[in-house]
Image (cartoon, rainbow, N blue to C red):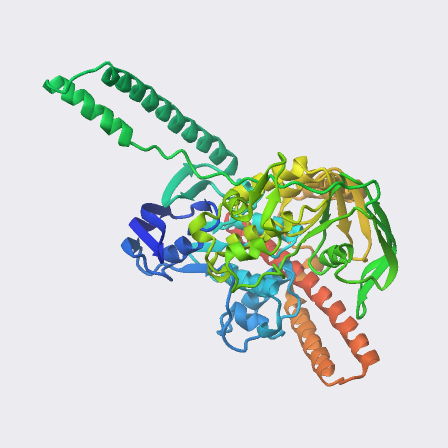
Length: 600
């Protein structure tokens, strides 16, 4: 069944045409990924589909009473809600299933890395707000779920959890994401917004790449054919044909018609050809560095020597200390103990998450000229800042635009150019894939392949890590860093092998037990646990609320605050375990009920 359709829809932003007379239909249960270069209007398109914005022209049609949930790229919350209240948009569930709904919301929040359900949303970071908004979109029943960059600001394990969640999602899904593995495993159709047009490809991301290549090759063949015809017609005209007969006039008109035809051979290509300074043998030497914030220890007496040409990916859960390590390497913060010894030839380029150095009122060209009027590119030539901007897909008419008029992705691309124009030989990239489009990431990956210096990347994008790094630093919950040779997929395989070796005996025991079970039922212990687990969850929530009251009343008593905070963290972890257990037992109870209905 068709849930929603757009017919000849157009939208402009000032003088810029985002999309023109495009058509799209969304079927029940369909999972669609939307891709395209930053600034082409992907987010604006989602808003039109969601009914938040009206198109300039065209028609949007949806079934009566359709329920749509929409996650914007940068959620803006209104009101003094707690985290849990925000998930339900201020309308807490009531009735017999209220506890079940609250427990499910807490389970999803926990999976997304949010543990304090009573915190005021206004106190959260931008990344935390995005995760709360994502939880709200997931928990509310909808026939169409629309997500704008849902994988931003979440760690690798959470991305995998979300991937599995959406893979099983029963409703229709339309999403923008730069995560190619995510698209490959969730989407069954890719639509590409390119130069105002919308192209649809049936299949996942891998199939989209193959089909897009075929389409571009077909266009190129058509252009070659047109050029051959033009050459023949031109040769005929140059032989001195006189336009006196009807046939001769027709030949000339045909030539003019062919000459006026234009075949669009695709988007302009981003070029990253910036030169880098020579890097000596000594790069970065870390000796016994430690870093803590309050009672949270992020780094413990860690030592490591980075070498020239090394490409390292850093992973770990949110708040583990990944960005802190990059800031220490960049010299922006100092470790509590230990030393960072930097080589004399090292020129660091630090690409932070927050675009910290951007003045949003500055013009695009002036922002780049602050670094250099001219830049040496990889082939040794000197080009102007304006020419370099054009290589980064900022045409001349856009270079006088204030930065605050750019899309989020365009700002990130501009910020990346500024970093690279400093000709660094050590690149520190903190979540570089956030808000960058796939074509830009593809070119950046190729650039990093040839980059002669050292590259250190914090990223949750598994595909990007697979393409760019040869070593993984994995932050553990104990504040230590484990080193794995290989890319992210190699790391995952090694971790799975380690877990499998530890769990093999238990797994065999479970398999044998399952093979013997003819009747699906609770064990006596599980039955008692299921009957009492909701009370346990309620009790834990009350304990956490009491602890939080004590924290608020502790004033400047640092020792008491430290003790209470530690207790709160322990209770939140226990609550997360119980919520997961509740979800498992509830699912098992449903299976048992179905099993009995079928008379097994």
